[in-house]
Amino acid sequence: MKTTLFSTLCLAAILSSVSAADGPSVTLVTDPNAAPLETHAAKELTGLLTTLFDARVTIAKGNPPEGATRVIRLGAAQSAGALTADLGQQGHVVKSTPSGLVIAGNSPVATLWAVYEYGYANGMRYLTGGDFPPREKPAFTLDGFDIVRTPRHATRAWRVRANGPASQAAWTVADHEILLRQLAKLAFNAVILPGKDEPIAFEPIDVTGDIAGRSVFGGAKSFANPDLEGDPGAAEKWLAGIRDAAGALGLTSDPAPAAAATISLGQPQGGLLPQTAPVVLPAGDFAVEAAIVGDFNPELHYLSRAAWDDSVTPESALRDLATPICGEGVAETLALGFAAVAEVSALIEKADSAFAVPDPKMFMEHYAGAEPAPEWWAKGKELYGKAVGEMYRANTRARDGARPWILHHAKRYTFALHYLTAVEAARNAAIARAAKDDDAWAENLEAAVEAMHNALGIHSEVAADPSDRGAIALLNDFAYRPLLEALDELP
Image: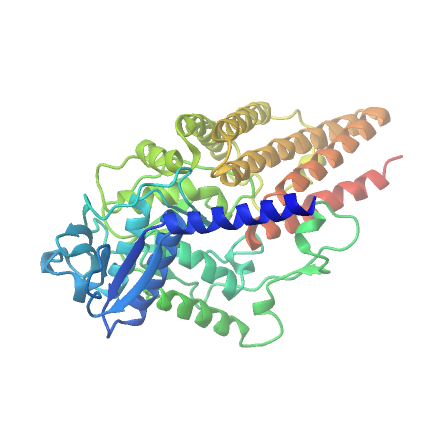
């Protein structure tokens, strides 16, 4: 047994060294006087080369060492004429030249975008929660690159939505730093902070006792933003921290241009159900906002690509997003699921635009009246059910790669399905109560409790950020606990 174990360990060591030797040796040439953003770009490029190609990267400042054969030149000072002034300050290139691959921009932040574009060209995809490398490692080459990019929209901003626990008001500065890093990879170049007249802080929500989705709170007694508690000047410090984090990535935090169009992803009032609608890219500057951020990676990806290339459509953007990280045929299945969600979103906006918008009465108002349930509730359940099915089909086809991203959508849509089931059961309980049918009253109220518990439990499995946790906290406060209290009041 000892001999076998020794042989196994030796074989593992040999395979490990062979694997390490397989990666290319790359010389990364940078400017000795590089700006901080270009230094950051060099670190990001080193990480991409390691992740994508298992490369061994040597950084040389100013000139490559004699005999270097795989050379990447980073930044304007190393562009060797590949950059031109007519590209403007935001223009950048990824170009193969006789002296090596040039990755550069006409400003330090544009050089950083060029690095991320190089990663994108090799299959790396940037989502709000993190990066996904391609399912199959690309072949390493420095030849054949001829990418030249100038933006169609000078300002591509992210607007921090801070209107309650299920928004970025619940995010710490550290949480914002993570999101801003991902938005920088999508070449967003501005962040718009809440104005002085906009309330930011919210009352902490008790998350003790009998609650659903308890695991997301990590044993805390209340849900709150620790960065906004205690100190009278906490809000200013919070805003300053986000501003500094943005500036370190080259994003401005000035007020949005007056003509900038606001694109609200999802329900404009911050509804808690996953909703989407076709995104129309405006002609000029734009600012994007969303409450539950993780629901909108396809839309953010589309905007990030179409802002530089007028040939990009939502359909082509989804294919370009999904295929490298999920495999062939997955994008088409995802599209069917997203289309079903768009259909139910339009249905909600037409029938009841305040449905599932955070409010103390948002759920129990459905238990207060005894009118028959509106027909669109059943249709909404059908459409969310269809979306769930398509997501799981896409997940099965993907097999590996970006399955966590697909599962996020699958379980968010399952949450919505259970939520509508709970609403329907609460209304049926109210109807039975009015008819003095105690058995049906109890049966439907118990069904509502179970469905809401299931909804929050499934959401908790994919709660990725404080907005998700805030939504779960709110629904415990406005739905699950009141349902339990109603159950206690049964005859």
